[in-house]
Amino acid sequence: MPRSTLPPEARLHRPSEFAAALKGRRLARGAFFVVSAAPNDLPPGQEACARLGLVIAKRFAAHATTRNALKRVIREAFRHRRLALPAKDYVVRLHCKVAPATLTALKRAARAEADAHFERIAR
Image 1: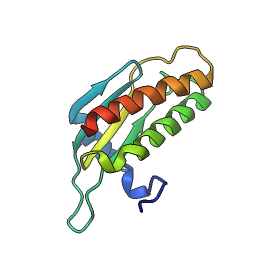
Image 2: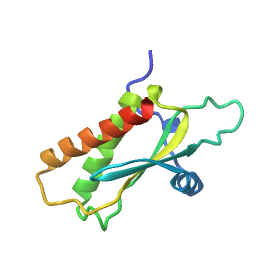
Image 3: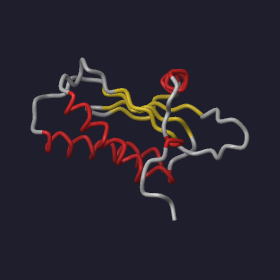
């Protein structure tokens, strides 16, 4: 049975990995996020899996609590779909300013959008 956490090997760590994924194909765009992907260049011997990178800019979400909440929500949505996604490097980028709203409402809207994007990519 797969672990219910998001392991370190399922995340992007190096700036070069982020750059490659951002240069890749744009798979989805919604009210909050743009999802880009590129084939992952894992060395032989490492198991190919979907990996996630997040770009949540301070200029679009001024408060740290907002940025952290968005990251948690996206990671959780990715974790649920990770095994169904093609083995690529995905970068989810916040592309517009977050409108003032309660944190609960923002998290609900972000989760709905993230789930929709990952569901569409998994098909």
